Amino acid sequence: MAAERDRFSTATRLRALGEQAAARVYQAQTRRLTPRPRRVRLTGRAAVLALVICSLVVALAYPLRQYIQQRSEIADQRRQAEEARDRVAELRDEKARWQDDAYVQRQARERLLFVLPGEVGYVIPDPGDTAGADEGERLENRGAAGERPWHEKMWEGLDRADGADATP
Image 1 (cartoon, rainbow, N blue to C red):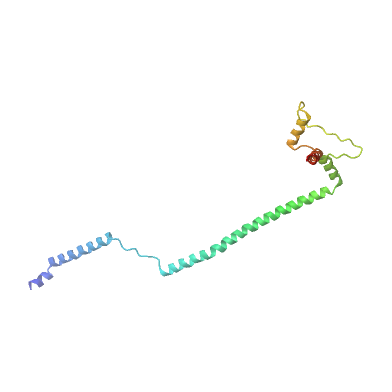
Image 2: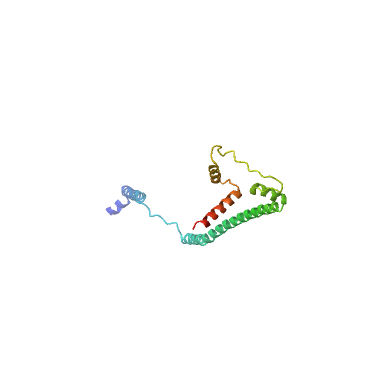
């Protein structure tokens, strides 16, 4: 009976409550100190969704790259076609100018040093030529600059060809 009385006594009850409270505090502290295993938040649905999105990105990457490349090529072709149209327009204008007899005559006078019958043609020496240099040096200097008239070049070529035939 004494054990029964001890069981129901206030002191015994308080001791039991204190021990229970101490055990709970110890358990709470150990739970805080020990790291919890991380709960994986990736569910099956999320994994399937990620897989679908990745497969769509992979499936669309190549056609999208081809589309962008073809758009770039189309832009280049349009630019080239526009340049060709501009060039054709320039050539048509030039062709129309060459159909005019006055333009042809002016070009022959300027480029080929042609003169009409009854006119006298003069070739004025270049003021850049040195006055003290002999004729050969002046021709050589003028030839280096590429400013010699066409008829001088033609005669020089004929002279060279004639000299090549004469040598055995």
